[in-house]
Length: 215
Image 1 (tube, rainbow, N blue to C red):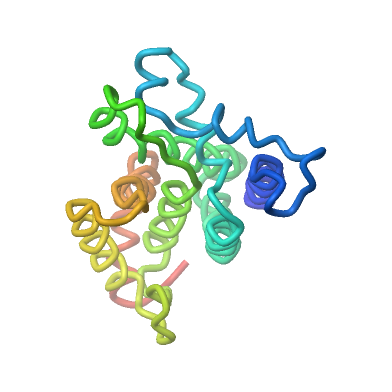
Image 2: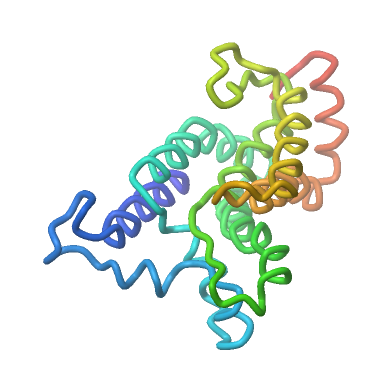
């Protein structure tokens, strides 16, 4: 249920903020939302617009950006939500929603510190939160098959995870594209660590899964 809500809200807000060249005519679009909701460290720090730490996760730069993130959330989110319900009981959906929202903010903190005096720097997208969901899925099922970019052969989560983190760190240092690799990295780390902080026995469960059984 929570995954569905996040997908629906993100799709609606993103489409409405795209502008007339995407899905909606100009009369129905709100491109000004894009500028008001995007992550901008300078505006957050110097203008106290703290809401941008969360709202930036609900807008996207293009239809493909939106589709990729929401498909990934669709494929992993329901599994993770079910796992949270199993581990945390009646509080499962709340804890899952909290992880997703916090991941948007936490994944942006390094860029917030780095670019707080650079008004030209902005970032958008749910990638930090989606990375958190993927790595929470790896925590609950380290042998879960994951396709790495366009490689058609699924890679076990316990192999995919380190490769993904190494790739994100490498690309963040290279800084040769417009992708928020730093947000991907820290979102992934947060998604793995957050459930363990709330339920430390999960680390033993993770290690046991590597040897056989899966939730």
